[in-house]
Image 1 (cartoon, rainbow, N blue to C red):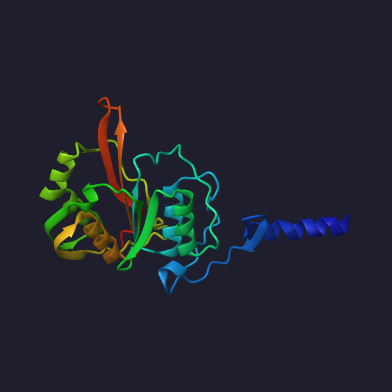
Image 2 (cartoon, rainbow, N blue to C red; image 1 turned 90 degrees about the horizontal axis):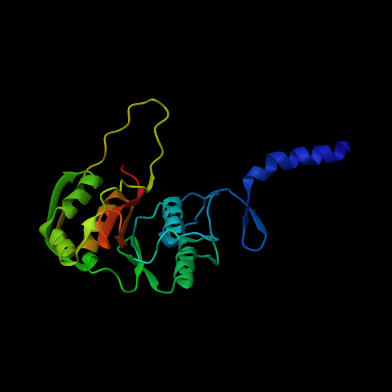
Length: 243
């Protein structure tokens, strides 16, 4: 009996460090230092969900865990009620992305100058809209996004596609952890962007590239909440590292 109790105590202290992956395999959650090629970095998160989960939830976990800057557009059909089961060959970011397009073959992913994009094969026209000049000096990442939304070309594309920004949407991505030390937080970093004749997607990629580890998300959808069959869009940082 004493031996059984002793073994139970040992398991009690060891169990929290283990996690299940795949067909009953058990591995330790010892996260490696995230450096080297982005696509070879390990997605390391004890709360990762691979069964019956959404694309944006898996992407948020994968990109935040690896520190990879990214951009995601979700299909108009990718609502919260559409769940997938993902079966990555390994926990490498590349294999995680491959598992998404395997489970959802209407998507594709690619790396563009250090930023990883995941989007429907038939992507939104708004993201391909050309902006003649995007010239913003010493602005925060959030201010750069506001500047894009206020550009004449972006507003014109919204009007042509009958889109309005969803009025009740207030972010919802994964933000940097709160400051619990009581020390005064550092001022937000500022960036400068000087781009000509680039698409909306390229501007968004440049914003997260400058920041180095955030992820933008874009989606269009219909809603009857305010008007019948009204078309809306949402554009925000799914993984939000302000500094």
